[in-house]
Amino acid sequence: MFKLMLIEDDATLFNEIKDRLTGWSYDVYGITDFSKVFQEFTDIKPDLVIIDIQLPKFDGFHWCRLIRSHSNVPIIFLSSRDHPTDMVMSMQLGADDFIQKPFHFDVLIAKIQAILRRVYNYNTEQITLKTWCNATIDYEKNLVTNDVGTIELTKNEIFILKLLIEQKNKIVSREELIKSLWDDQRFVSDNTLTVNVNRLRKRLDELGLGSYIQTKVGQGYIAMEETAV
Image 1 (spheres, rainbow, N blue to C red):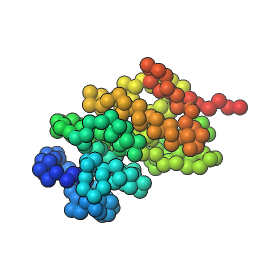
Image 2 (tube, rainbow, N blue to C red):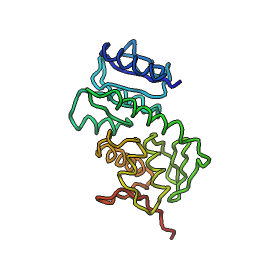
Image 3 (tube, helix red, strand yellow):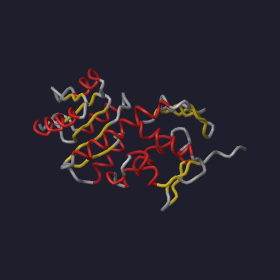
Image 4 (cartoon, helix red, strand yellow):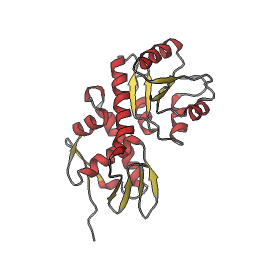
């Protein structure tokens, strides 16, 4: 049974979501002290976090930043705020998805199922190490290493990189990436993918590899293989 941590201060909404998720055989935990969210997170060790933006004490961005600095656990934001910068900020902080309130429960469960399948199932593949552009990609540990150093990617970032590397030097369409990442592209905004790819590039830039992920306008993205000198 997967453990889900629901960080929501609206008691009515919390109980409604908890009841629905429990019916899907998820073990749902709430927050008892909103000034100690991270402490409760470390105690519970959830498999996925669902978090609101507007919370007592500190907002959801604060807790997402703190959780992400210590863990790659999948994070989904729920928010009644509809400003595009909220979604962009969420993705830049390392969230895996963003759902605006009010939402249909089928959308939430579809996103949860897709993320859990991707995060906890794809690592069972036999091939866990891959070499690309003189860097070693460790799919199991979400690490990219070259002579410059090592970076740890989020689940979304390593999955996007994996999809692109598997078809290196070939254009992978935006539609294919969205479908592979979130299963049902009807529930995903096109900007969500853009933010995730840009975040991946920014991380790869730390190793001098960001330029090898190229955008093909109107088509998709391509992972270029470094040409041997």
